[in-house]
Image (tube, rainbow, N blue to C red):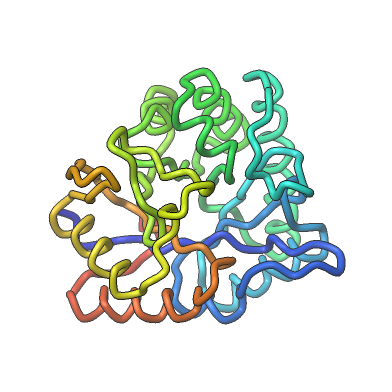
Length: 254
């Protein structure tokens, strides 16, 4: 299995007077940042500051488009059409690309957020809408997509580079989907348990589901959530474990 992995984190999700996540503390340990674009979180100033901080740490820049739902943090399912999803992604990726360009930088990837990500993992039409939007804005961008789902197939069908994503701090269902956050078993809160899951996914290409079955994954990028309690400890512990296992950590596609 792969001996190189990208370590990504969702960031820039604060807005106004409201603070979310541990961005500055997590940045030293990751290789790519998925930066909110103002719809589920983030605002113009937060976008600018997060891009700047990521660049200082040499972290690859990614747009993190979500549903237009600040109150629900983009984690509530919405009845949106493929055309609406296409428009949402085009606008958000374009906005962050502009922020990056203003600092002499360019985007590296796109990763959908929350409910939009999960919906597109199950719905081929939504997956195609996201992939088409990314290709139309910049066909050189890498699409980060949940491993072994229609998101990956959509990107490949449209000729996009795709990084298959697995999660360090989430549990899995037998169909390869992530356990709903409404379930008490959704989040992995023990860093040692997380490390064991991470190493097995990378070294063996397998992950144990909450049903007790093994499913196959082909990980290119590994997500850590910066908004969960203990995020900094998770990031530091996982990065150390990867280094000790001789697994190279680098942005996807590099």
